[in-house]
Image (cartoon, rainbow, N blue to C red; front, side, top):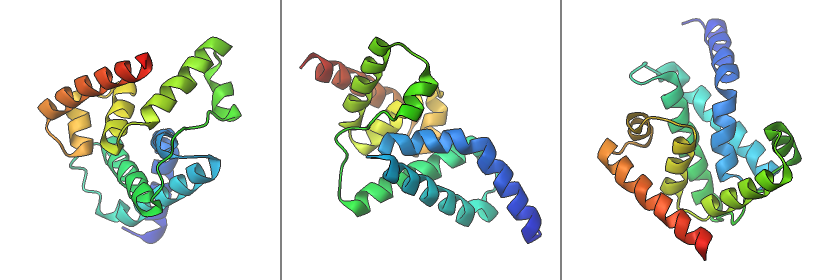
Length: 163
């Protein structure tokens, strides 16, 4: 494929998948700077991998997998684990909810951010209403393992919220 054509196709894909990339990065970011760094690093990794995308999985599954791997690697290399995920005014405004709902969302994100890397990835996909098969494909685990882990995560979140 010609370079200009490849670039055009890639930019189109990024525009189409921008929301997905942003959501994944948001779940792993400490602050706006981390979010921007993660987004940029994810786009770079997508660009590096784009010529090798074979279509074995859906484009969305492929993007999710690269975004999650990039974010997890970023955390591993930075040796920091965020304790909270700030709800930025930009996101809070786009949710168009009342104050009570916003407070609950902040609380939920705080609880989710206390989970392990795989647990966060699973809960993000679950909140995105992905099928168990899609989750398994993205994370490289079995469909049965997805079901078991999700049940454990939901129980863990309930226990954390009752403490």
